[in-house]
Length: 157
Picture 1: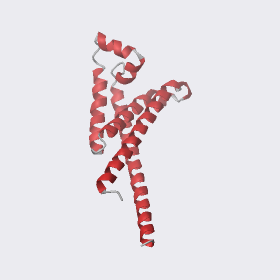
Picture 2: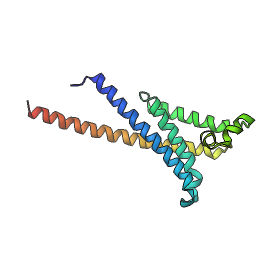
Picture 3: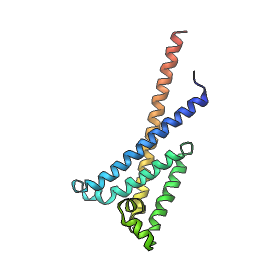
């Protein structure tokens, strides 16, 4: 029989694994939205990359701060995404070199666009919605399994 503390550690470990998988999946979706952009409608090509990037940022903060509230992850995601976007106003030579390579451009972007801030907000809101739905589903499934275990135990007593 596990103690409440052991169960809590196991639950947070499983949640951290789920967020890690979600981050990796989101990265692949973002890269795919760029690689296969010629197959996608122009509206999705124009907006999906930034929205998916912001979703990945949100999921990354949920991974890092698993024991903190969703509100903290939203705030940190909005702050981080906005900071990255506003940093694009600075065009020093050293940062241009970083943005000049593929990975640097993916992480830091290339130029400031006000509309990107809106895309980030939408992406973070979408990630938050999916996060809450997933957590409710997991909670519902857990409580259902827990009640089934309790019924089984009571039958054998």
